[in-house]
Image 1 (cartoon, rainbow, N blue to C red):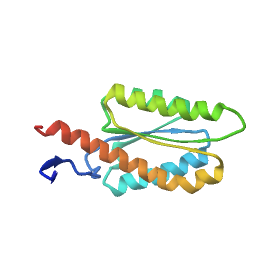
Image 2: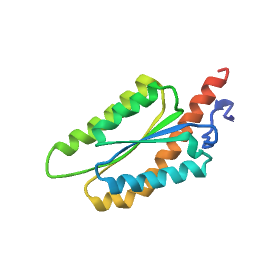
Image 3: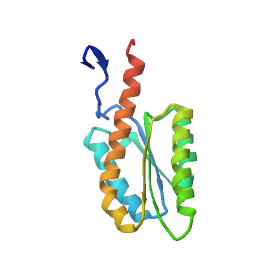
Length: 160
């Protein structure tokens, strides 16, 4: 912990050596999903998360991700969860429905269960944008999950 102008401050911690992380990935736009997953797991392992403390579940699409996340969160087996997938704009309004409702569902699952969930679902106009962003987004989702899991642990263990 640090102090900023005499204010107690929790600094970001990315150590995952003691954390158990669940990942839910959409199989729709699978090539993008696998790119996100590769970058995500590389970042998790770089920060100490052990293979034995990782679980991957795949679901058909982005709309199914929130339900799987909530089920994992309610199992009390994970310090944080990560959602991975890609929603790529098509010719219909369906893009907006899937993008908005999957993000909303992730937020609801996180708030209802108290388990941090990193939203690593890309929403792009085309495949090229998704390919260009997948490595960074996957790594970012891993860091968000680690930081938020450690923050929750620190809050629980600190006498505020």
